[in-house]
Image 1 (cartoon, rainbow over the protein chains, first blue to last red):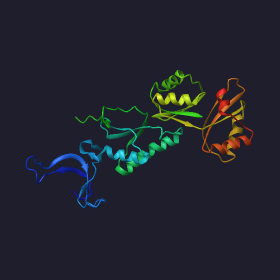
Image 2 (tube, chains in turn cyan, purple; image 1 turned 30 degrees about the vertical axis):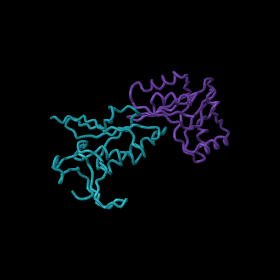
Image 3 (cartoon, rainbow over the protein chains, first blue to last red; image 1 turned 180 degrees about the vertical axis):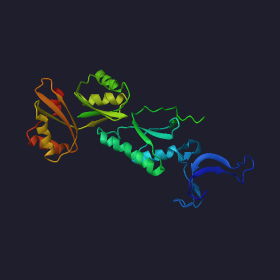
Length: 162
Length: 140
């Protein structure tokens, strides 16, 4: 993997004798930062983990990480709204991804045109950064499923067993 | 002051709004509902906006307050046209409006949602239209 390119973090330890790791796959998505740190350290660094390989969805051949969608929502709203990704496949159809976003008071407007512009903008931003056309649905707050602790971000309704 | 509520197109949501308002004794004066396939925006004129907002927020709804203009006009043909002319004549853009007829039936009240509220109020008053204050609106 070239420096700076996103990929899975894999460890092999050279010096450990008691508990060696050989190509230990972390399933974490990150990249190597070769440049010197702002603090002066010159060692190569590993970026903060941006996602997990097991989170990855493949929608019509496009790899999608929930963290990418999250970044886009963050960029548009300034905060991360609560969201859920719903993947579905119609019989003999293609995969469809629907992004459901909870409307907070900061995003809400009494004007329909502004709300439509908001969902349109989310759709366009996802299309231009992932190259994937998705559906965007605005939903009421606290309607999306929450599991204890970690929020459940992906609902996959595809029947992949066939 | 208008209270707007975000509603998903699901059965029973409107009933929950009205129930939450009834529980705190808020009376709805006028309302308008705009909708798309997935969701709608319910706009309400109520007698006690502060209480209404709190009750709806507490019930988990996304709520916002908007300043709107209420104009009383004679309930006869051409009544609305003359008011709208005052606004469009000044190049003011109306976002949306809705109307209701007062209890005595002599006057109709139109609620205007404008981009530029001060300019619209000035244009209306200049044209001799009867712009209602919040108290007058609550008393209808």
